[in-house]
Image 1: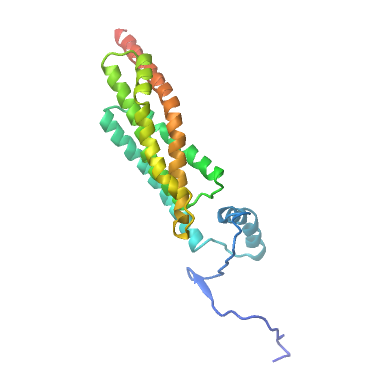
Image 2: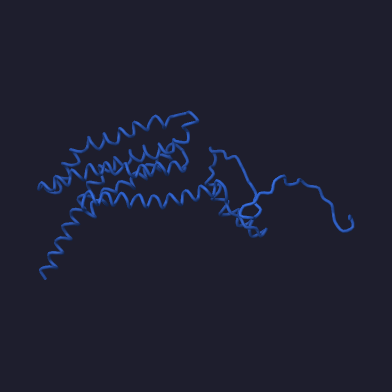
Amino acid sequence: LSSVVDFTSRRGFDVLRHTDSELAVHVTATVDSAVNNNNVILADMQKSILPAISSQYGVHVSFEGRAEEQADTIGDMKQGMMLAFVMIYIVLAWVFASYGWPLVVMAAIPFGLIGALFGHFLLNVDLTILSLFGIFGLSGIVVNDSIILVTFFKQLRESGMAVQQAIIEAATQRLRAVLLTSLTTIAGLTPLLFETSLQAQFLIPMAISMSFGLMFSTVLVLLVIPAMLSAYEETIVKLTFRRRESSTR
């Protein structure tokens, strides 16, 4: 036998793993969260390391297990977020009986997203699946401040008040209601931000998304929404004037 083969000794495989009837390798590692995070490492592997391995050894590489589940979850959440925005718009369009006013109200949602990302950066916390869940809930909460402001503005306009005066009156009269709506929610989430127990650690990213997003959006709602109300009213006036001109012709 030794004349036709060469004997070598090496460590044997105790388990042969398979995925979709193909041999698979289970790779595990401990990541120092103070230096790096899982998502950055996986992205770097997909960009530079795995293509070189595939071309050199002729193997097919794909992420399975937890990485695959996380990617599928994020993909599903993107679709769910779009559906949530559509549902919010439909509800607001039904309540306001208008296609334009819901866009003014929903303008607060991007401000909440900016605040959520800033909160993670400020506290040096990585974005997780629960962070995205917090942004989901935040999208439905931040519109409350806009609804309070826009609803009161519409009531003033229907009573015959001028646009600029109605904006000033709505911003001043509804200031307390907007602040109380946001501050009570933020106060309820604040203790969770400083929770040190291991059981509550995984909930902190969600609390960061909701509290910082709501804090950021509240300030911008009081500054930006009045400007959008003025721009929206000017647009309506211009469109009405053009329609009258076209009808007279």
